[in-house]
Amino acid sequence: MADRGISIGKYFGIEVDLHWTFVLLLILAFVLDAYFFLIIVFLFICVLLHEFAHSLTALKNRISVKRILLLPIGGASIIDDTKISPEVEFNIALAGPLASIFLGFAFGVLAVITPIGILTQTMQYMFELNIFMGIFNIIPAFPMDGGRIFRSYLERRYDFAKATKITLKISKALIAAFAVITIIFVLFANSFSLGYREFVGFWNILIIVILYSGAEGEEESARIRELTKGMSVGTYASNNYIFTKHTISFSDLKKEFLKTKKHIIVMQINGKYYVADVLSYNTRYVPSSLKGMAVELMMLDANTNVATALGKMQASNSWVAAVMSNGKMKGIVTTGILQAAISIALMQKRHSEEKEL
Image 1 (cartoon, rainbow, N blue to C red):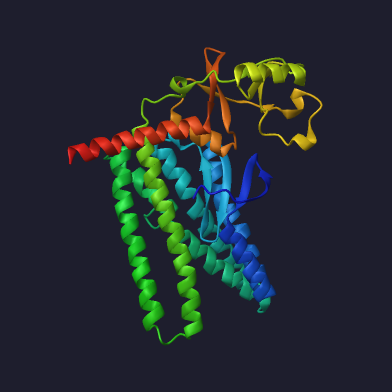
Image 2 (image 1 turned 60 degrees about the vertical axis):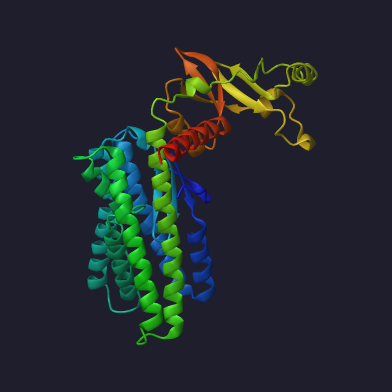
């Protein structure tokens, strides 16, 4: 569930994205019925508040939050989860469902006190949707909040790897059960119209795909986290760049490029590092100076784990970062280098497992 969505701005310093399925739901609702569209907009606000409950709890515990991704069945707060203790993960995961249940009861109270009419009906729908979202997200399966709540509980007895493995088994079993129930409903629930059953079936299939993809992603993330223990970015720091002043002329830069064959340019301006790639900018819009091509360079400590570093770079939408050691720049690392390092480690692990068999 780390897919990038459509950005709708930053709030509390956190970028908020809409997943394509949420966008699809909004478009479908707008085409079908104005009132249905209004309900989905209310749902969007509630999902956003659900995710902010996670994010603000994380920030309160000094955990970095990079992005929120909103989906019809919930969302994902992209946080730096490498330094989270089981207790903090439990609190962060539980905050979202509790916020949804609180919103549900708030809408329930409004449904009781408002005059009977369209507003009461709307409050009733929001009561039901929020209570459902809160309970659904407590199910002990990835990628729901309940999966992380359950794993953090298991970590009282097992290590992270085993706790994740147990939670994944339960997750896949519950997803399979949901798929079977959906098939039975579509084929045999004759008390409902065929069109309604087909709609529920289609929507449930979409949910199943999202859930299964999320569970697979969690499994891969956990495998990489265990596999890359002891692998730091300092090992993969590269000197394949040109370090120069931002005042260098393009003619001198061309000479340097032809001599070294290096296209990544690093410069220091007012104590900060900046980076530019001479091969990436559009030649139709040539900047007046090298500074006009540059963006601030992300900095990583040389001891940072490679999987952690890759996650931070992807969350910040950075393709390159400076590797720092004792306050000095040791080199650079790109997402491609880190992905290659992790892929090689995975292949070595699989090869050793095959030899054991």
